[in-house]
Structure formats: C-alpha cells, structure tokens
Length: 225
Image (tube, rainbow, N blue to C red; front, side, top):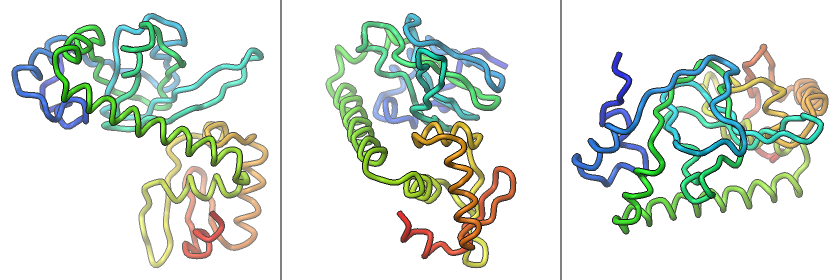
C-alpha cells in the first residue's frame, strides 16, 4: 500500500473541497498515511506541530492531563473529520494530547506547506476561519452545557446526538468510546454516569447491553434534555 494518499482520499474535507487538482496533487505529495493501534499516542501537548490530520477510520481522543495525571477528554474525533489545524497558528506546538481510542487510520498533512497556501489563497483562509468560528461557537455551547445542565441532561443530549438505528419505535446507539471516556467528555465522574444509567434504566427509558444503549421511549427521553 502506498504511503502517499490519493486526492480522492481527502478532497471532500472542508479545507480541500474548493481547491483545484494542481493544488490537491501538491498537498497529496506532502501528505502520508499514519496507522495507530488502540491506545497509541499520536502526539503530546507542546510537541512540535508539524502536521494536522484527517481521520479515515477509527476514533481519536483529544485530551488534557491534570497535574495529578487525571485525564480530561475534550473531543472525540471520528471518520472524515480534521483535527489539529490550529497548530498552524498556535506557535507550532500542539495544545492538547491525542491518542487513538481504537485502531485508527489517518492522513497527516504538512502544516507548513498548507500555511504557505493560506498566505496566497483568500478563499482558503475564509474556509478555515469559518470552521474555526463554528468550533468556537461549539465550545461556548459546551461551556453552557457543562455549567447549566445536570449530568443527566448532558448525557441525554450526548446520546441523542449519536448516530442511531431505529427499530420499532426505539433508538439503538452504539457508544463510540468507553463509559469512562464519555463521562470525562461530559464533565462527570464514571460513578455519576453509572448512577444516571441505572436511574434511566429503572425508569424504563433505556436498556443497556455492554456498549449498546437502546432508548425505549425516545419522546420521553428527549423531554429530559
């Protein structure tokens, strides 16, 4: 398998979709595939930021570490999503840690080369600015959610936002990460999440089967949020 991605592997990502084939070919020539095992680190906070990435398969975890070593998950990045683009404007160092939650395949893009493209392409700059504005808005919404909502409301909203299989009036959701990781993402402890799951199960709202949760009463479940 070639270590260099084909244009078709990344051209639909928001940063690339409006570029002509000549530029795309130049970007591809300076990109490479990366494969990570479950739990394998991609980079650590303050590492030199030479690349940004597109997830093709698997899931990446972006997180910070407290002084006592406790992990706080900031984002789970799934397939066809870019991450670490901001490294181009952050002094060239990563602001967070990144590791694979499961076997994951990525495309790594040369940040310095792409920054050179931005300097000469106003439309590309606007596309990146628009995406970063959306992310800032998302972070503000996240702060509101963490400060104003109960842990149960946060979990319900998170579950409703996940892809689901609809079967006979129910919604079946496969959790994309461990319950411990999801608890960290929601700003609650694993013990609190376990109590929330037990309470919702006792109320007849959900059925829990390992990493799969079936929402038995979607309408009533939605009203909790």
